[in-house]
Image (cartoon, rainbow, N blue to C red; front, side, top):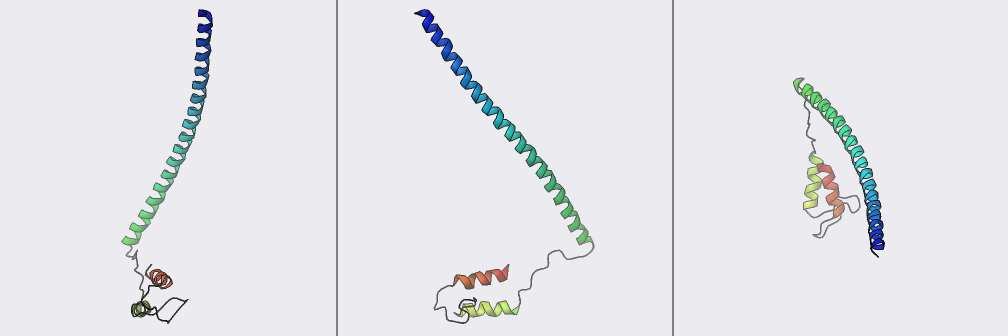
Length: 118
């Protein structure tokens, strides 16, 4: 009986070792994938740093040359007129242009006015 119990213990131990070996193999695959992803991210980060340095150097050259980098967009009088019409209760969108809004906001008008601001 002792031999049978010992044999069962050895078989159980063998099964545990096989299970651990499968888990270890899966862990090795996961680590390999993570290392590949890490390397890809490092490479991408390097390229982005180089690109950022290029852009910053171009910007500094432009500032030294006296060029204006950020020109604000002049929306103009037309936009102001459309915004005033909308505030007075009229549609300024292409769907219902000129008709009365009856106090309700129109998503088309708001979308159109916000596009003008961008």
